[in-house]
Length: 87
Image (cartoon, rainbow, N blue to C red; front, side, top):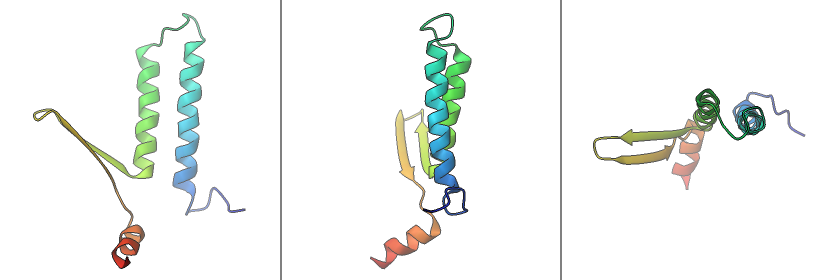
């Protein structure tokens, strides 16, 4: 078994941990008083965890409010770019 905390796997490990933390945090917020009312700070913290995950995984999102468009692209590492160029 590979070490999940090695330099090669730390981004994926952190993104999985942050994903589960965001889900757990939002579920706990649903069951604390007042029931079924989520405060804006909970939504903000959960969304920040999801943004952190996307940054670790290399997802780039651009929002153009003038043209009302959203574009999402995946940043590729140097090694992935070189391997795709070989194909």
